[in-house]
Length: 300
Image (cartoon, rainbow, N blue to C red; front, side):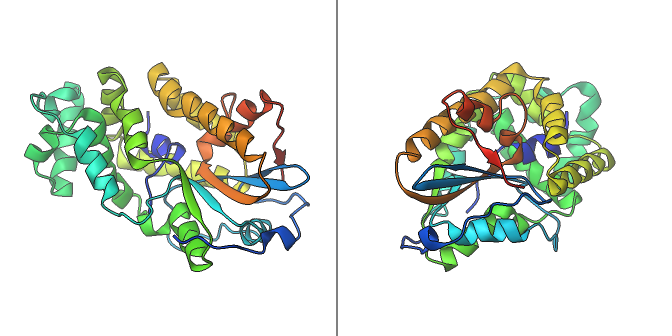
């Protein structure tokens, strides 16, 4: 199971102002073109764009198509999985609150014997004190160690789509909100059984060359809007843990679908950006919406 793939399919806690926009007067995109997938929910006075993201990207990647640009420009609010808001320390506090526990076994003992050398090397490469990792629950250690994998893949948090969108909407003084708080999102990991948490931890230890190839394949599929390939990749990983899939995909998509259905009762145009894995496969957000009688139309 590749953490590089799971991590891009899940949510990233990323880093606002509130003002009116002129979106209601803008012309909505209509023609379908190639590029990262984009959908819309619309009625007579409400339009919701659904955009699947890759949470970290190589520098310089040009992912914005004219259709995506128009959707962003025409929307008067950005909705992310998590919006940091005005308190940049909220994420750190949530991690400390949920991710640290006393009396845990040493981290090295929480992975199979054949993975321990890889874990020791990753810890050494990252310069992270082992004593700090030993105090972390398995899910928290896994998230902490992913930073090293991101470095190996040449990825930069500043290049993530959520980061870019937050900058755009902030500059335009448009509201930015989150479907979840940082503590809620960490809470999903914290509620996983220890077995599922350790699978995440082991996944961090994938061979760098393999992780790089898998990420490249997922990125290529995302850039082409190949939702079927994204779904296959995501489903292969998540199938290894039913608890992971239920907690981090199905339950969250169901809650988000409820929120979107209620949001359709209010006029306006919003741009919703969540991890691409949430918009692919049989448990996708679109399928959850269809069960409520709402059809998301593919634009791109």
